[in-house]
Length: 112
Image 1: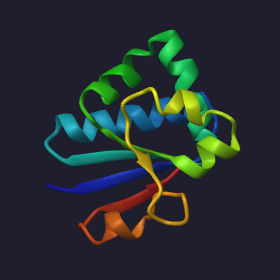
Image 2: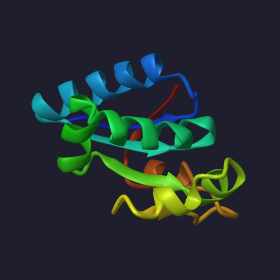
Image 3: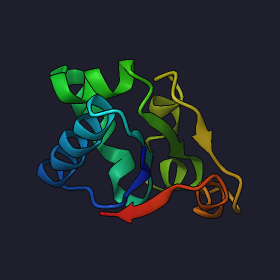
Image 4: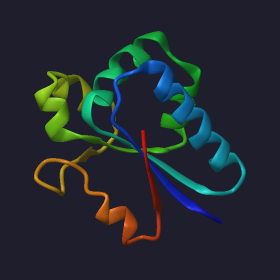
């Protein structure tokens, strides 16, 4: 079993949808997959929620979205909304989620 964590940085919905496809595929094939929302990607969540994007909802319901960057959410003006989603805020590295916490658990890190 592989352990993969995707750090989503880009605010491009199509790019994020492909990340969702890959994370769900890995999970369905027995691997451990996690998603961390960082950078501009934190702004995608409101639109995905409003559209009820099925891939996003499935990943969220399965607990694949591990955390949302607190500092980036605040900087991009979406902190209050993102805090309503029931997804933990990542802030262990000066307000951002650290890659080290995943590396120390044996995850391979992929950034998009």
